[in-house]
Every structure is written in C-alpha cells, then in structure tokens.
Image 1 (cartoon, rainbow, N blue to C red):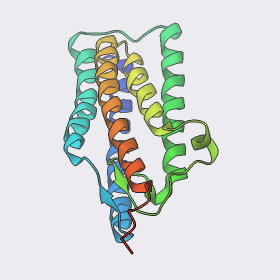
Image 2: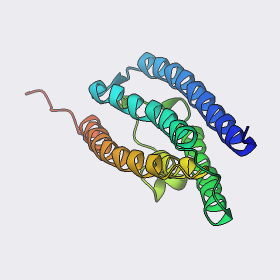
Image 3: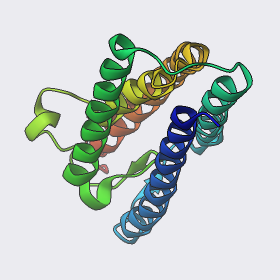
Image 4: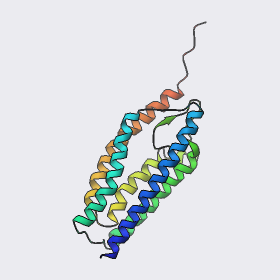
Length: 182
C-alpha cells in the first residue's frame, strides 16, 4: 500500500469532518439569526454549492486512487500545503470575525450592518477567497490536477453568482425603508 496516498486520503477525510462540523456550526448560527429576525436569501443555489463541494472530495480521491497518481515533488507539494494553510486561515478568520453571523447560506439580519473592520475593511469576502485557495490547493497535494482545475473553475462561476445574490440582498436590506405618506 502507498503510504503517501493513504496519508492524502486521511487528510481529505479530516477536511471532510471539519466541513461537517462547520455545517453544524452554520445551522446553529442560522437559528440565532432567525431569532433576531434574520432570513435566508436565494436558497435555490445552495444545493448546487453543496453538490459542488461534496463532489470535490470524491473527485480528488477518485483521481488520486483510480488514475494511480504519484505524490508530487516539493515544487508542487509545499506551495499546495501553503495554499491549504492560507485558505484555512482565511476561512477561520472569517468565521471568528463574523461570529454567529457566519453561515454557509446567505442570511440577512435586518438592521445589522455588514462588518467592515479588520480584514473585512480591505477584503470584501475573505471566506470565499479561502475556499477558492483550498479548492485549488488540496487536490494538488497529491497531483490531482484535473480536480483542482475543473472544480476551481466551477466554483468560480458559482461564487460569482452567489456574491451577486449576497450583495443584492445586502443592498436591499440596508436601503432605507419607504416612508409612509403623512
């Protein structure tokens, strides 16, 4: 048995467990936001996003195992490992900064302005950037180039759509409400 491939498989499994834990945290945060009057926007895109991310896990493992890939040399492995670390750090930063406002779904809580402090003061979507980096980097830890490229491109299209939905919902929630006639 190839120990490097086994190590990659265990790492992918650990990342999968981490994502499931994040989904649990997201559900808890969504319940808190609902208690404050929050609501979900554009839920129809969410199953596509879940499918993309779930299939990413399967695709990189299938590519590594079925195509009998070999572990990359250090010129690929270490940059990919750095990408994983940077992506994870950005996502963790976003989760910590947003606190109970962080969700995997698009949620709006009326009268709660977007956070614009810290990294959010210069980078509008650090969580999404972290996801982009991770989706590209993790498969490269075991030369799964096809997964890295195909899922990264698909994710960029989906994120482009999601960010438009999110920005429109934020604009609408922050717009002054029409005044009733006197």
